[in-house]
Amino acid sequence: MTGLRDPPSWSGPSDDPNDEQFGDVIEPCSAARTAADDAAEPARLDRADRYDAVLVGEPYDGGVVGRTGAREGPTALREALAAVKTHHFEGGPVGAVGDLGDVEILDGSVRAVQGTVSEIAHRVHATDALPVFLGGDNSLTYPNAAPLLDRSLGVVNFDAHLDVREVRDDATSGTPYRQLFESGLDAYACVGARHFETSTAYADYVRDRGGSIVTADAVGSDPVGAVEQALATMTDAEALYVSADLDVLDASAAPGVSAPTPGGLSTRELFRMLRRVAADDRVAGFEVVECAPPLDEGGRTAAAGARAVAHFLSGYGAKGDRDA
Image (cartoon, rainbow, N blue to C red; front, side, top):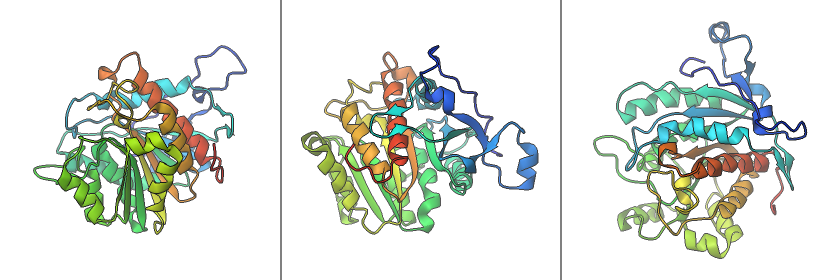
């Protein structure tokens, strides 16, 4: 598809034939929808419509407020995911997953990049597969989710920050949900928000629009109750978009992000909540953002992000399982 680089090949590193890994089951694919696109696509690529979910890499950190490095996230997340086994004890193996490759991002303002990504995201959302965007920074959440605004849309954002800053000179990784609200977002919940990491004005902005702020403290006390609180905000939404900003995790679990801080979620808490949200029939898109390999320590952040994808896909494939 125009605007996407050819997807990489996948293989699992284990030499045990019983070890089915994501690297063994993810396949390169195409989202081509027209005869012209079909002619331009390599014949070896299968169409995205035959998969349950498709990966899209977004190697970009031009909108980062803080330390850069997230442009290397998609490669690191793929490498970590390739070695993850496909079996979940309650859900079994994951379904069919394709890889569309990385978005070709040209130089320009963040707004211009968002426009380019939005065109591609519209095409990906038009397939029958669930889009799974591998970031990349949080500024691309806006174009990733915007194609779903033709319906009543709710966003569940696992994040240390609310990301509803005003757009001034240009969009940033701190503005995507303000942009979505201004474009018609109907419901918003931030799960894992950290005390002393946002401004009163932005907390008021979310609450004035009926949004829900579920703190990291609330998650630590009752993860199931926390995610149910977020979903209760989505009552009237027809479609759900789910974002996992890896800075929602405690800095000890995810040092390789733009703004690591103490007091965050554990990986176990995040994985459990992602799997619960993924089982909602309205889910129409998912992303993992702010994985910055140059800032990482021992690959911990990429490993956490890859397993976030695995747990989400497991939950998405196990509709109706609310307790795992």
